Amino acid sequence: MSRAVILTVLLATFIIVGTSTPAWAAQLDARINPNSDSSPFSMTYLKTIFIEYPNGGQLFDELHEKTWTLSGTADISNPGVQNLMKRLNENIADAGSQARISDLNVQYDIHLKGRNINTSVDYKIILKGTLTEYVITKDQVRTLIDLGWRGLSTNQQIEIDGVDINHPINLFKVEEPLLYNTIVGTDAEAILSNNMINADYIAEQPLTNWHFLFDPTGINVDAGTFGLDESISGFVVSSWTMGESSLREGRQVERVFEAEVNADQKYSIRTVQSADQGNLAAIGFGALDILDGVEIAGVTPTPPQGYATTSTGDFPIFIVYGMAGMAAIAGIAFFFVSSRSLKNAEQGQQGIDPSRLVGYQTSASSGGYQTNRGEAQLRDESDYQKTRSVYEESQQQSPPPQTAPSSSENEAACGCAASAEIGSECDCVMHGSCLCDGTCRCNADLCKEQVRSMS
Image 1 (cartoon, rainbow, N blue to C red):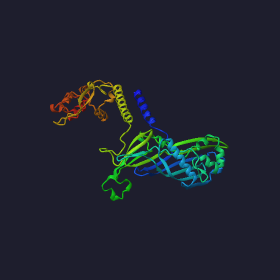
Image 2: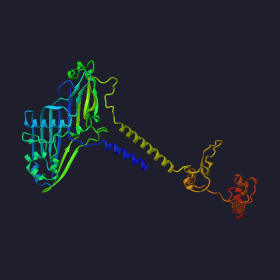
Image 3: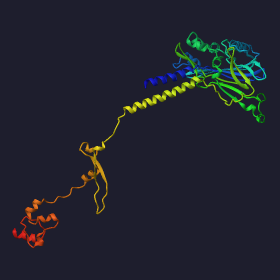
């Protein structure tokens, strides 16, 4: 039994741990049109920072009533945006992709809110741009598109309007010098130096692990009557999504970093990032492949003939066999435990042995009617109180009958006492004489007179 349980736990741990990976905070949304030279995309980066001061202190005095917001937008004319687009294209090239970003807009929103127990800083950076050069080759049947560009990340300083939006520690150096001087040189400084613009996990998660669907609306005969977009008219739309906790992608959780700071008081610095999400769509039916280490998709206007499913069909085979193995082990363990329980259970007749019981009639006759009611009772007297008859209990509770005087007493008192055995009062009356003595209690007048004469 213990061996079966250990094997079950080990197999479940292998599946969960083997498919679990850390989660980062980036959200991708893009639709690639293989029939166009450019396609739009957007990327959102989110993070929340908590400065906790449970014992008060200088940070409490400085922050608990403070509120401010830094927000703004910038387009490709801004030097900071130009620097960011350059760094992102370098990151795409390092991944082996040939795609490029040709246009970029940046929106940032940083909000600080002080409270009595902590201060929170919410970061949000939104990138919206245009992707080009993603078509690798195209013929009459199929178009190969590059999908290796999706990990849009940079660790460089990105200054827009004099603010480094990529590293929170640099923001605090400008906006909150007391906070910066408190945490510089501690573990908290390393946490706040992590770059905000980071989508490495989206690039590292293979597209084969993403959930695949295709929408055949574009090839419907009546689709045009519903105002269908011309870009998808006559095509299906393939989509790959990630971000759900599953056996394919692993368990998606928030990514949390925390560090203690010992200054005038003990402070806690904590950063929280939500799990990554990705929505990548391509016009046409996309079949995934790899070219020179880069993930690509071969896109056709319609799905191959006979392709009937609209959901991911290449579910990892080792997971299927693993689940079947777990079910088999659980079944074996169940039968093993059941078998042991039956063996340990007491076998044979339970309760009173029927051979020790004897039946007797408990009903009485009434005129010519006789019932067959009866009950069983032990042959011997062992443990009789447990099987005592309810009829016997009722008889014991009824008042005892009055006893008649013994025959020896009657014989001594009256010579006619023998007649009592046949139910008559006194046979002396019938004979006209009495043989009674003075102690006779016969009620006959003859006997009473005789008793008076003898007394």
